[in-house]
Amino acid sequence: LVMEERDAHGQPTGKPFLYLVRETKGADWKANSRLEELRKIQCGERHFKDALGVDYRVVTKATELP
Image (cartoon, rainbow, N blue to C red; front, side):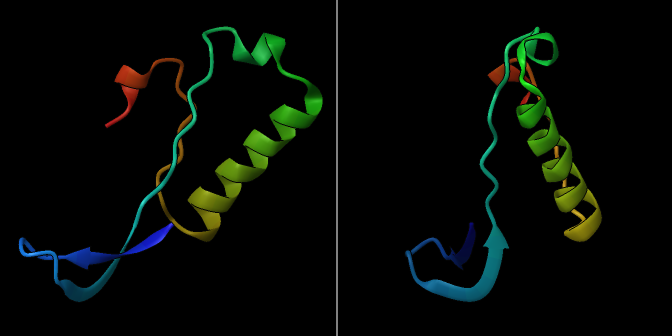
């Protein structure tokens, strides 16, 4: 999602910024995922890292998120 930055008063600053939604996976997600799901994860990683130049991680706990 690309959102518009807001100042302390809720007014738009005119600067867009990027929000990324992160999905957590269980500790054994690789062993329990179907091939189709693994391919989606690989494609997502390549798209975000290579095409957009943004961070992409698959984590096992929400506490691993920034």
